[in-house]
Image 1 (tube, rainbow, N blue to C red):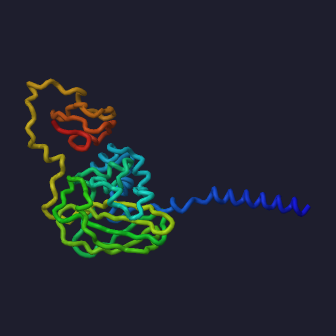
Image 2 (cartoon, one colour):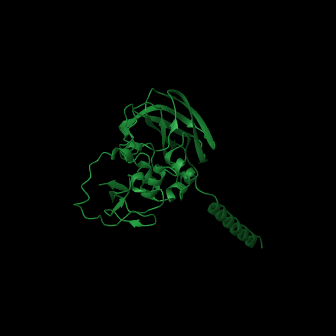
Image 3 (cartoon, rainbow, N blue to C red):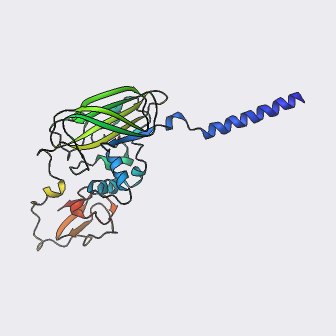
Length: 284
């Protein structure tokens, strides 16, 4: 009897342990987050609403990569980074961590929503939807003279501060000392987990120091472009641009009397008119 009792107890114990193991998530999946102030690009588009973004930049980002990236706003990360950020993430893809899912965040534009800042102390806030202790946080800013209409490179970043062995909460603040800058810049952060995982998270937060060094948006630089006379050119394929239409790369449309060529396959939405979305349409 005692032997049978011990076997039954061992069976119950093993079953309970298995149930607990299935219910408790592993430590490699509990840390997620992004910058909330100044808000990262993914945080901005998440707050605008993935299905109905308001800014031209977020509309273009959603058109480039879809809406799911902004529902998964807290996962711009690499699971096995382990401090090898520059080796793993190529130039031009720093904001997406080199992940195709988040490729819309890498669009080089001068109209990303930006927080107005000035040289001197700046308190930044990190929103960790799942905090994790013993983490390192690095902060950078783009160099003076950086052009926001060009892809972001590692060589464009200037180190600001590193905070090691941090134990973040849901919202954690640090104070950075911003150098003298003018125009638009990016505050870039890296959250590297140290204990229990090699995962790292990456953010691009747009800021504006003011001044006259910010290049004009790409939507205005084409206004002086000379177009071929319409009397000698046949109408472009695709007819007049219309919301709700699915366009493929190379399709041509007219809008406002101007011809455009599609650069990225997408289904057009109201607000994505060719003059407003240079990432989607190239003026001919």
